[in-house]
Image (cartoon, rainbow, N blue to C red; front, side, top):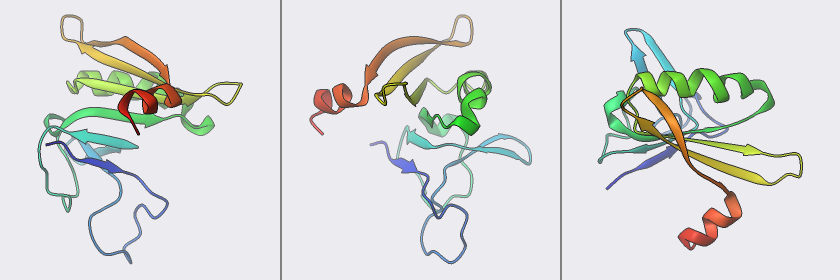
Length: 129
């Protein structure tokens, strides 16, 4: 069973009990990245400070104006290099419609290929949420 962890507004605050709110992905010795949302391949220790790329089935990034370049270029490239099987990008268009673009890793060339571009509303209808 996979577990999902989401970042929250209190990320990094030490006065909160329990697991860290931000899934931190270890990318190298002494280097990590914070994921907006992570879906894990198996049960994991939610108290872990860092997770290995092999722990993550899906990396999800929510695009903000300040993170647009990272979320469209840098992070997908990094996650593909680390071998994370899926990358989802959540972004809002000019009409304020939220899109979820789902990508799968093409192991032949080591990059992500788009396999689904849907709206959040359609995705929620599809999954019954």
